Image (cartoon, rainbow, N blue to C red; front, top):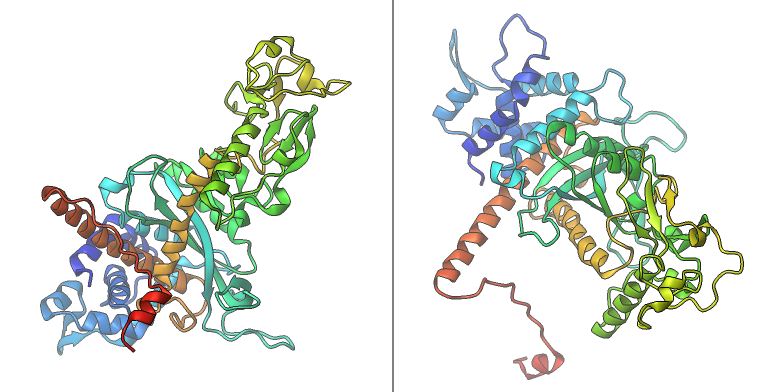
Length: 495
């Protein structure tokens, strides 16, 4: 279990408690339970694998040693003697906190003060030595089911008016899609930089939103606000669910904030999608009009691909890169950049560029150039406006080997949710939090991710110490042992 001083240090470092305390009304008698102690109790509840119930928060606080109870105000001296914190006091303080952090008119999205409080708690849970270790984030969303029953089919209200019907994926055979009633939980998990050292996969940002809102549009402002807080954005690793949104919802805001997108393209966005001044628009790049169609229609490598399949796929993507118009400048403040014909840059041979015909014959050659050459073939350079590839442009050529290696880091988002939905610990399934609205479960899930970060750090430090111990003895780092039992081994074993 995570020690209480560690959790208190995180709460104090975040500065959330005094900020929220100043928002609460002042009563005739001072409250025995402070916001700081309430947050500590919520973190203790999640650290002990308990559900997000206020009764569990009260039990966690009242089960502390007596000296800790007096220090935190759980046990206070009243006129009639020592008074132990009651459940009604816990419920009252929590109601005041969530009421102050929630919107006056709930709409299924968190308020600004609630989002800032959650951001500060998660940021405070990251040790200083890892804050600048990497700027790459793997993002994804998952389901967070409400305890409320859905509204009646004939119409009417339900206990949780901010919840709504959403869609999630399951692991059962057959139809893997199903509906649920609740909220979407979005999170950004820290991942190592390209060619950088390994780092602990810590949750750095998270938000919750009603399923009636798009989780991509709800999470984009959370990420774009990070540079203003002094946290630069690097690689943003996302699946096709993010890339398929319109550019104004995801790609453009992230690029304006300084992020480099590494994302899988939706099948509807792959391959040739029109032309610009004769150049073929495909997979976020511009290609020569003489590019072979099979190369433009290349898709990502299959999961069960063999080494031979991988080598052949990489050879095709490398050949496709030769037909890409070469970039000459970076994006200016308005998003414009300049490109040049691949024959002019010496990547292919083309009769329309006589100087390219003197190149070695190991380069691809355009055998049938267009009879009426377009602007991309006649002009020395082209100026590309930002709207041409606003949706699909990304850091690496899709689906090249460099893109595949970089995109492989996105699985960290899946591992982050797996630790938050593990039935053996804190499972955020239906019944984990029985409080209605958006602010209560979002505040609880933030404390869950805060505690989860400490578990990841503890496991990380243990593994690093073990590797150092083995290195001192001249042994290689310990790797996971993969057990594989064959039919012959089962047949030879005892009955």
